[in-house]
Amino acid sequence: MTEDEKKTFEEFEEKILGWAERYAEKNGWELNRKDNQASVVVKGLAKNRVMYGARYCPCRIRSGDPKVDRDIICPCRFHRDEIAKDGYCHCMLFKKKEE
Image (cartoon, rainbow, N blue to C red):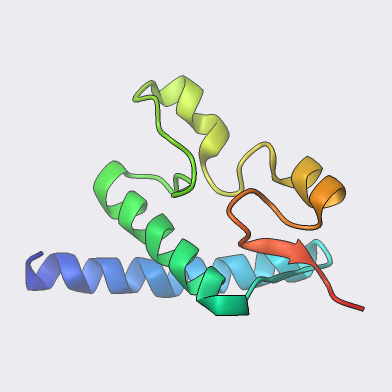
C-alpha cells in the first residue's frame, strides 16, 4: 500500500467510524465494542470503500454485480431485521443497547 493509499484508508476509517456511531445513536443502538468488533468491521468497510468504491459489508460476499451488491452496502438492507431478531446485525457492528 502506498503512503497515499494508506492515508486515504485511514481517512475513510475515521469517517466511517464517526458515521457508524451517529447512525447507531440515531436508531437507538450502539456499536459492538466487545473484542474490538466495531474496529475490525470498520477497517473492513474502509478497505472495501477504497478498493471497490462503497462500504460493502466485509462479512458478506460481493457478487460483482453492482445492482445485487447494493443490498450489502453498510447499512445493509438486512440489518434492521437482524437487530430486531438477534439483537445485532450479521457482522455485529450494530447492536441493541444494553439495559
